[in-house]
Length: 139
Image (cartoon, rainbow, N blue to C red):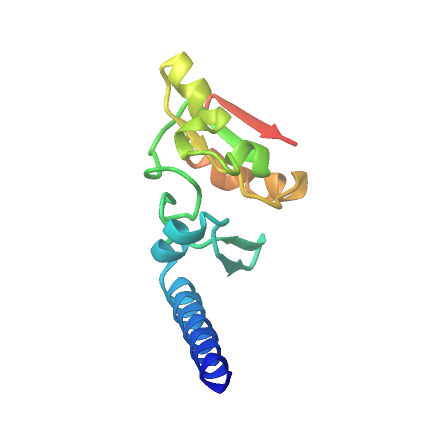
């Protein structure tokens, strides 16, 4: 009976140790976190918006938005929350990218989960920097 308890204790200690290692790896490596959990991006502080996605997070551009790169000029900028961001779907399946595919244009998705129309207004100048013909704020 004592040997069985020792084996069980050792097994539980190993599981707890492995969980701790995985948690630390996910914390220190955004790419590992993304591959392991497919969670929303980590945030960095922003003086104007309070927070924005971390640009080092996979599938995010240098501004922290979910695009391959920041365009110099685009036809469509999409602002909004998790629906526009494409939460729980591939980046190419988010509606701004689908509109771009159908209309043969390159959209710039500036949506972020948990953003509201106020953040959309605060992002207006940044959205205008890519000279869009249209800005859509999905809320």
